[in-house]
Length: 156
Image (cartoon, rainbow, N blue to C red; front, side, top):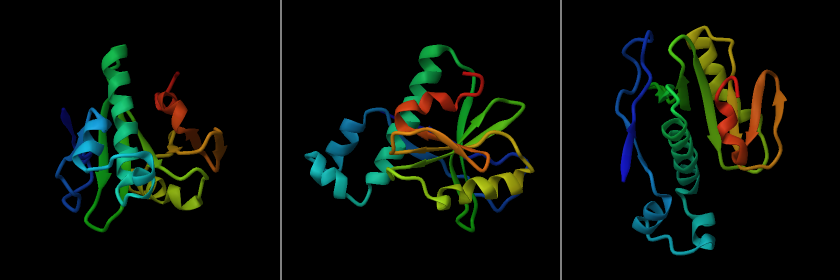
């Protein structure tokens, strides 16, 4: 019914949040437990962004499990509020992914990705998955529609 996403904290120090995040495999169950009965209530619910993030992370977990992938998924958050929604760990490199419900891209979405790159001394792939329809690239960040979330896996 639920799974935990562990925090990524390798090589960073003690200022990180190390508590796992809880996700539901079934977002229908999640919305039922939150007493969200229809899409109008969902659209205006204060947790709609978190529910969208839950849906996207769950889709990637399904992809990993169903396609025999070996990547591990984490999230990153420090005690100063810097956060990346998802870290895809390939073993030799980590790929940060921000997940935003908004139907249009904002440069604010890359704030966590920039912090990640500075902290981890990384200049590799980075993604924003958003609620819009178009895929594009802006300043080295691949912006993906939520419908194409599986494309965050490098090499696909």
